[in-house]
Length: 382
Image (cartoon, rainbow, N blue to C red; front, top):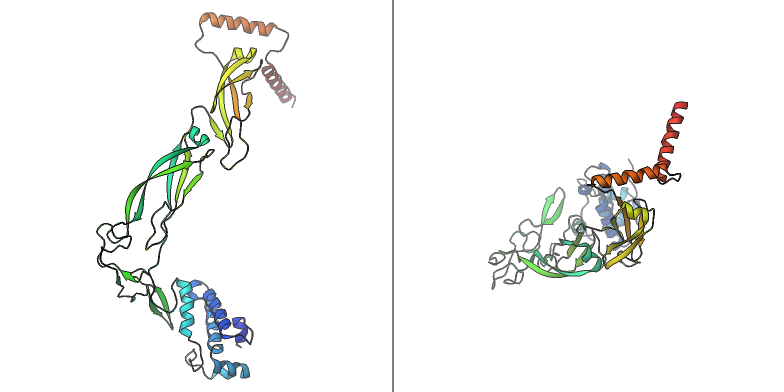
């Protein structure tokens, strides 16, 4: 089977310089590396093809022979499926160090590294608020258990007056090389976990962790209009970072407790208002509560149960801005209970007068009865 042109394999022009040649190979090696494509045999073949092309073109002598004679000019130099690193050739292990550093998270070259700093974890606090506080806004004190930098050792983890020692496994590099087949792989040191140092004399307060648990008291300013699920971010109030890394954030999750009278729906408030059947029939005026005080609600005569009345601008100003909502009052006509004998007789007399009258005093009932009669008439005609 004929081989593809090496320049075509790497996707470069014939006048490519060494830097761009290396970048092209690194890109293909990362894309087709077997460890990233364990279930794709075709990727392994492309990885080997790119390696073969780079091995030839990165060597000045082999590249000159290939440019003049093609594959025939370099096939004789093959040995055991690989190419030698003659004079003028690129340091192939340096390229692999770069590639595997990107794949496995390590750095190239194996040099000594400083301890890596880690950002602290974010924390969450559930804050229960009354509807009144959520609508108006408030300021509350909360206590949050968290990890803070150890004051005894200033976060180093070592006993005062002592320092961490260089890791004997990786020599302080934080990484070790492991041989896998024809190439070596650079991995995080299992002894120091990539830090390059180990604590031999730990701090008595934090036991070498550099952080201790502490309960902090914080003041949280709750803006007006917050609702269920809203979050308030307190930057830097999460867990302390490791090795001098920044602290995480604290997210205060708002939970509004159920209210005895009102229910919130976006920017509007809802409430149910019971009225007597006398007021529903004759009309009148009733006092209703709002979050800003009491208001009079006028009930017109002949009001039906379920009628919705809107009180403008008695709702909520949204936390992200916008128009203030309304208070929606739904009236429920209440049926009297625990009637005396006299009251029952009076109601019966009243009902008799309704039935004797020529006017339709119960339009909904009359309409429903007519609809039922029509339904059964159509059923009998089928």
